[in-house]
Image (cartoon, rainbow, N blue to C red; front, side, top):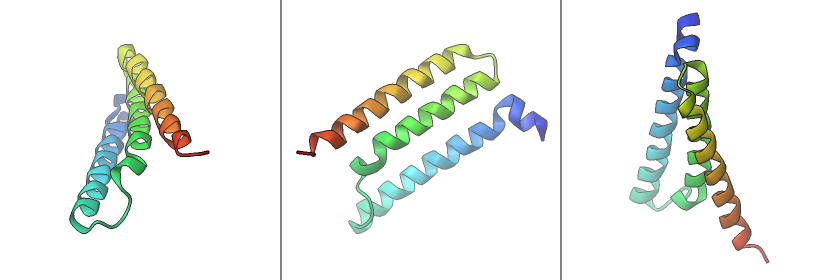
Amino acid sequence: MEYWYASGTLVDGVITLTVVELLALWIFHKRTGRGLAPSDYLLNGLAGLSLMVALRGALTPLWSLVALGLLLAGAAHYADLWVRARGKP
């Protein structure tokens, strides 16, 4: 079990499940017109995925993944806040 944590395999599984969830939400909305529109969750999901990439890099000696993940997470979070604030008076 410790191998799953140290090697990043557990994080890889969570990343995979998150991508499948985002795709399922998109497909459901596209086919039925119900549920959340991708614009409502995509940037937030991207920020979360980017943080998981940073965690994956921290668990293994891939420090470039940490920097890339944190940079992308910050950018996605800022973009999400900007889009949400744009619609407020």
